[in-house]
Length: 81
Image 1 (cartoon, rainbow, N blue to C red):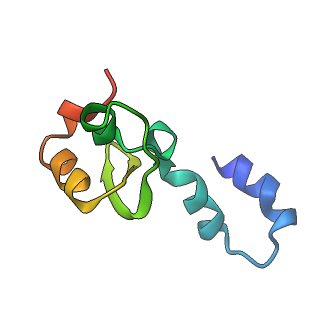
Image 2 (cartoon, rainbow, N blue to C red; image 1 turned 90 degrees about the vertical axis):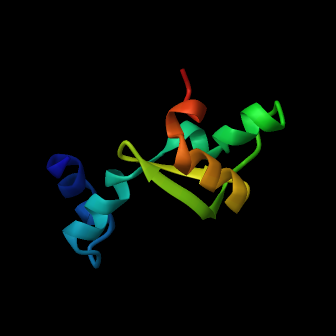
């Protein structure tokens, strides 16, 4: 990770190294789609950054606060198998 951040330093000379590392530290789960919507709407629905939950080192995005709360209560129920 340090090597990648150092390699990017010439492209972002004004950003501190910690800021560059944080871009790579938290990944988006399932390409930013709402995992609850796969079960309730039976189709992929894009998540919104204002409805997010961090679980297992990833950021999960949801299309509504209700979906976020449902997944937050039982994340293994909605996680990809």
